Length: 403
Image (cartoon, rainbow, N blue to C red; front, side, top):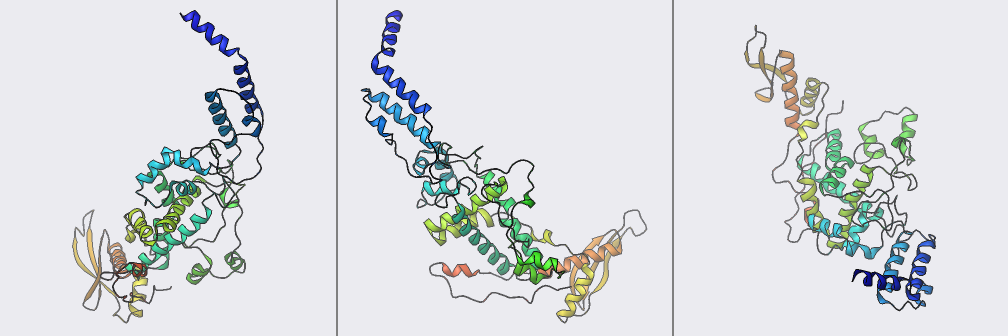
């Protein structure tokens, strides 16, 4: 019986119809397809060459196999996966459900957020436009949250808090938490659920990539002092000098590509689901992270800064007084010092010496002033909600003490 089956199989292989299908299979694999454009047009399962359409194989199964082979062949010529491949990707469906994205956001747009500009230079198929919109939304919502909830924060602390909330390192960590994997090399045959970008060559220094020219380097060459005002006008939202992204042919780092992906997701939600969905996504994934702002302060001379603050606010000069002490003549003394302005105690600190306790008390007083938060603060974007209460002007402080 096995010998009879083997004879039937061998005779079918040697049949003229099978030999014609084999020659066509080899022809499809041996013929090279040249890349005509960097775009990623839609492909259909029945798109096969004209010569394949006129070949009479006679076997429907062989014809379907030829179509599948040609589809895999043609996908290799595109820099990013075709749009229709996103519907069949289980990774995209899982990511859409894991992030609880709105149903109005299609998986095709979610697949586009995973294609970096370094992988596909065509603006119609990469995430550059979506990332630009998402970046503006993230920085806008974060800045209004910080300024309305902590109106007295120094500018340097605001820059540090902005970086902690929506900086590239934070967004890259979010990409890992969302379970997004990276493609080794971008291409049309890659699963659309993978983050695709061109990596920078090993040994390349990130600081040496092409940068956009900004007025700040010119000011630095002239020897002008980099003040707080210069950071507002010349620097980015994190207080750093403005730099341009690397060119598409040079590649990007994994951190840059991951941050661009998160920003693109924010922009896609805003376009497809509207402002309420984007604001809700921001609150669930950005503001839900705990940030201890009190640890971002770095005062070099807190006693001097406190004295200048009291002079500006017309308070009585601060005076340090011992509140309690123990073990003065032992090996481990502890002193508790309070800083008073008249009858009001501004802060209290403990230390192994009087000088250390006085510095900590002044630092506690400064933090108590700058970390002031009004009751029931509201942000300007809350007026976009339906049925919002009348707007009450937010508290605007004089600002930090410039020394």
